[in-house]
Length: 112
Image 1: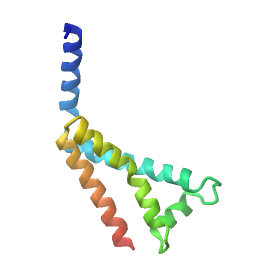
Image 2: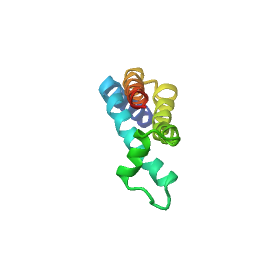
Image 3: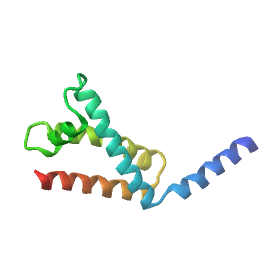
Image 4: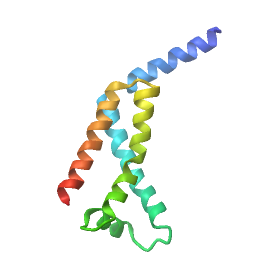
């Protein structure tokens, strides 16, 4: 292993240690859930028949679509879980991601 590769690996480890905290996981989980919601609107409503507010009402309303929207909204969190846990071993950030995901799921289920 060359000196440059070793230095690069050490830099990545330092960055990983700085980012491995619960707050990063919470922020990541919140941001990815919002991104997932917008992606689900884009995929599930390609004709734009619903506004963002209308699509949100589908998620919050008493209908058969809320579980599909919820599942699709949380897909980015599953991808982040894979990388944080299996690839990067960032356990503290993973705790924040899991916490915000469970809180989001609980909120949706309480509203139904």
